Image (cartoon, rainbow, N blue to C red; front, side, top):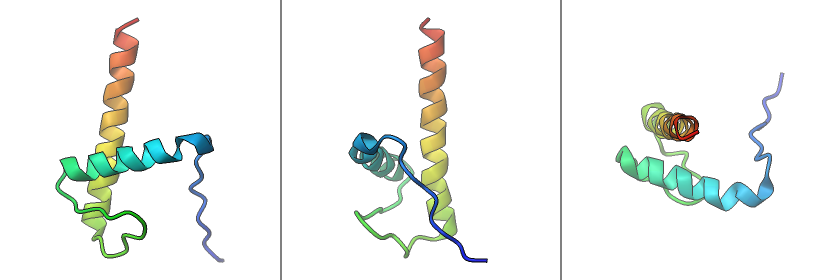
Length: 68
């Protein structure tokens, strides 16, 4: 069984915004993220960035629905 990268941005125009969002999240958790390949990150560092992104998305959603 081969593994393929199935992470696809649904709206291609959003790619730059997602990259910026990822860089901001990495900065907030103290992970030195470079543009391009980041294979030198530990699992903990990569998970911290992803977790921060999810946290921020949930906060935005909660703020959006509470404003209605």
